[in-house]
Amino acid sequence: MSDVLKMGMVGGGRGAFIGQVHRTAACLDGKVRMVAGCLSSTADKAIASGKDWGLADSRNYQTWEAMLEGEKKLPASERIDFVSIVTPNHVHFPVAHAFASAGFNVVCDKPLVHTGEQARQLIEATKKMGVVFAVTYNYSGYPMVKQAREMIVNGELGEIRKVVVEYNQGWLANNLEASGQKQANWRTDPKRSGAGGAIGDIGSHCEQLVSYVTGLRLQSICADLTSFVPGRQLDDDANVLLRFCKAGASNCEGTGPDSMDAEPGARGILTVSQICIGHENDLRLRVHGTKGTLGWLQEEPNYLVLRQDGQPEKVYRRGNGYLGERARGNTRLPSGHPEAFFEAFATVYSNACAAMRARSEGKGNVGGIGMGGAGGGFDYPDVVDGARGVEFIERVVEASASSEKWVRFAGK
Image (cartoon, rainbow, N blue to C red; front, side, top):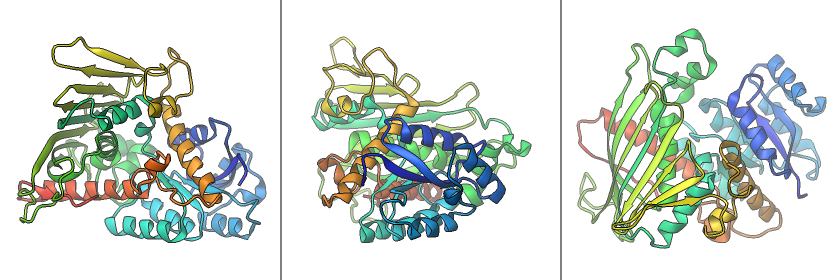
C-alpha cells in the first residue's frame, strides 16, 4: 500500500452537501486520492457527477454493485484501498456489508445502519475479513474534544457525576420536506432515515461524543420523543435521561428487570432538537466531576473550559504546547489559526487511514475506539461504536413508546 491511499465513494454526487465534506476532508492531508465512484443512485447523475470530479470513465460507475465488481477485477495494487459511503442511511448496510465482505476497508457515514441485526452483521464481516471499518462521528475528531478525553482519563475531573449534552438546530422548525428539499425529504422519511429522526440524525452524535470523552457505559435510559411539525413521521425533538454504570463496576447490567439494582454511577441529560428557531449547529457538552467541570461548544471548537471549586476559570486553547499528546497529535495549524469542521472530519479519515496502512503491513489489531485499537494508536470511531449508536437509537425509540420509566441499555 502506497503512502497515498486510493478512495472510492458511493453517494455524494451533485448537490450533496456531505459528499463534498467527505471528499475535502479525506484528501486534506494529501494522503488520499479519489479514483473511483458511484456518486448517485441515478445512473445519469452518477456519471455526470463522476466527470465533475475527473474520474476516469472506466472507474466512473453507474451502480455500486458494478463498482464493487469492477474494483475486484483490478490488480490489488490498482484497486481502491477503501470505500467511503455517504448515501442516505438506508443504503449504508448493503454497500458496507458487500465491500467489507469482499475485503475492502470501509468508511461509512452515521448513523451506521437501520437495525441492530444489520450492525451485528457488519461487525462479523469486519472481524472475519480483518478490514478497517470507520464511522464518521466527526465531532470526536476535534483536538479539544481529544483534550477533554485525555484530561478525564488522567483523573483531572475526579469521579464523573453528571454529563449534559445538547444539540440544537432550527432548520426543520417548519414542514421543509413538503417543499421537496433533498436533505429534509430523506431525513424525515422513516424508510430512508430509519426509526429515529432528530435522535438518529444528531442524537447519535451526542451519544458517541459522551462515550468517547468520558468512557462511561450507558446502563439505562428514559426518553421522550416528539414530532412537533404536523404530519412529520419522525421525531424532531428528543429529551433523554441517562443513567451510566459506575466507573470500574463489575456489575453494570444488574439482575432486576429494569437494570436499576446495579451499583449506581453518573447521571446524564441528552437533549436534541431540530425545531429550535435561530439555532444553527449548537452542539455543546458539559462534564461534571468531583474535582471540576469541563465545557466544550462545537461552534467555538478551539476552546475547552475547565472550572474548579475556588479557582479562576481556565480556558485551554487549541495548538498550544501545554495540551496533551492526543490533542497535539491531531492538530494541523498553529495556535490562533482556527481549525474546525473540515479538519475534524479529516482527523477521522487520517487516523482510520493509519490503521489501513498498518493492516497492509500485518500489524495485528487495527480496530478503533470500540474494538480496543485506541491503545495501539488508532483513534477513530469504528464499527462497534457505530453499532452502539444504532442500539442507542433503537432503545430511545423503545423507551419513548414504553409505559416503563427506564429501559435497559446493553451496549458495550
